[in-house]
Length: 449
Image (cartoon, rainbow, N blue to C red; front, side):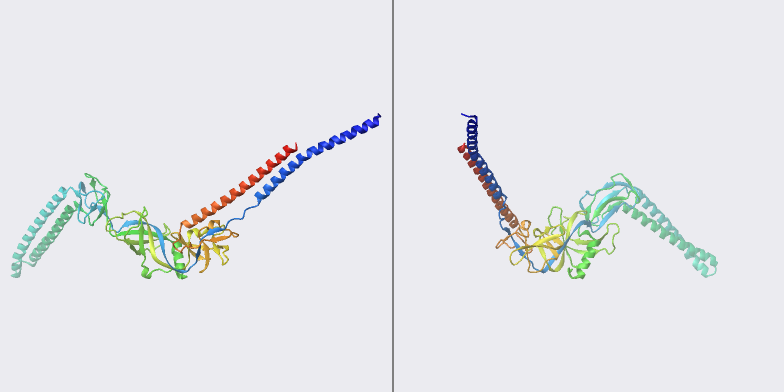
C-alpha cells in the first residue's frame, strides 16, 4: 500500500475522532448554557421591584376656630413679705426661742438678749428724771414767791425774769429726762426680739452667746410670709414685641382688663390646686436679663409652696381667632421648613410647606400654609411619598385636638410586616429558582457523560 494511501487513511481517522470528541463535548456546553440562562432568569426576576402596598393613613380635615391658648413660662416663687429679723441694740445674744424652719406667729418671741445693762440704764434715766422734777418744784415755788413781791415793786423786774427763766429751764430739763427714760425703756424692750408677722422662719444667723450689733452682725434670721405667694416670671423683649404684633394683626386677643388665669405646675408634674392672677408687670426693661418682670399672686393657705421654688407658670385666657391647629405627628421637618402631606379629592398626597407658631401640648398652631376644608395626613405621614398610594383608614379620622396616638403605630407596624413578607417571599422564590436550575443543569451534564 502506498504512502499516499496510508496518509489519507490516517487523516480520515483523525477527522472522525475530532468529530466524535466535538459531539461528546456538546452536551457539557449545552449544560453550561442552561445554568447561565437559569441564573440570568433568576437575577432578572429578583431585580424587578415588587409593587409597594398602599400606605394606610389617617387624615384630618382642617377647621378654623377661635382657639384658647396658653403661654408657659419658667417661674420662681417668692414670699409676698420677707422680713429681716435684726438686733436693734448692742449686746450679747442670750437665747433662741423658736424652732428653726417652723411657722411662727405674729408677736412670737424669737430671740432674747442680755437685758441687765439696759435695765441699769433705765434705772439711771429714771433717777435723772426725778432730779429734774425736784428742781422744777423748787423753781415753781421760787416763782410763786417772787411774783407777788414784783407786783408790789418790792423786787426788781430782773428778779422776776430770773425766777421765770429758772422755772422754764427746770420744766425743759424734766422733758429731756423723760425722753431719756423712754429711750432706756425702748432699748430694754429691744432685748426681746419678736416676729412682726406670721410666716415661715429661717435658720438663725447668730448663735447663743454671740455679741451682736445693729450695723454688722445684726441680722439674726428671716421670716417669710406664706400666704399669699408671689410667682415671678420674665417675658423676653422678642416675645413682647411678637405679642404686640399679633394683637395688632388680629391673630391674638387678650382677655378684658388682662384677666389672665395662672396655674402652676410643680417639679413632679403635678398641678397646684389654687389659681392665681397677674397683679404687676414691670414697665421697665431690665438691661441685665433683657426681659420684663411679671408677677402673679397665688393663694397658699396650706403652705405647700415655699419661697424659691422653680415652677412652670401656665398663663391662660388669650384666644387666637380663626386659628388652625394640627397634631404634632402630622408635621414633618424638611430641608426648608416644616411641611405636611395634603390629600386631594383623588386621595393623592401632595407636599405642602407651612409656617408653624406656638406649640400647645401635642398640637401646633399653623400661621400660614393651610386653609379650612383641606385634608392632611396625620398617622402614617413618615411613610408617605409623592408617588405613594394612600389607603385612608375608615372611621379613624382624628379630631383637631384629640387624636388616637396608637393609630400611627399600628399602621406603621402593619406596613412593615407587609413589606417584610413581600421581601422574604421574593427572596425565597429567587433562591429556589436558582437552586433548581443549577441542580437540573448538573444532572444533565452527568447524564450526557
